[in-house]
Length: 129
Image (tube, rainbow, N blue to C red; front, side, top):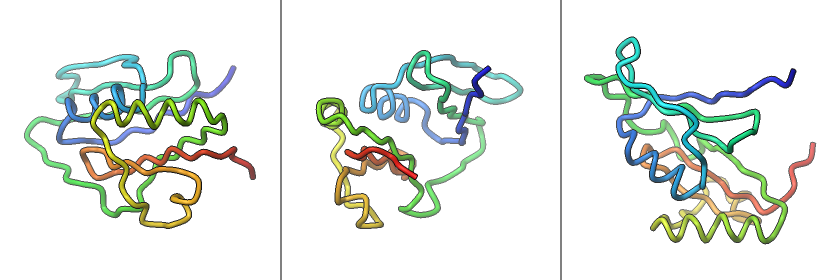
């Protein structure tokens, strides 16, 4: 059995994150919940893959923005066509790249900031150890 990775974090703005991660990054909404033990949330990811993101909102509690510009989620896209399609999807959603805090990420990728200030890097490279 393959383990599943879930990266979860709170947000103050679920609708804006849905636009960024679904329209921009092309992730699918895999599930959602409302008023579950006081939380609303969504799970987003590529269908059939062993990882997804969960964003939760607790009404009445503010969580604020990312603590720094170097909180990253990095997608390695070695295929040139797949990388270009991802970049074009972000542009079509009205999302422009921002300069990376660490200039390393600007060498072979583009960085985008989500509505909460967390950053996503579309890295045109293969990940290697």
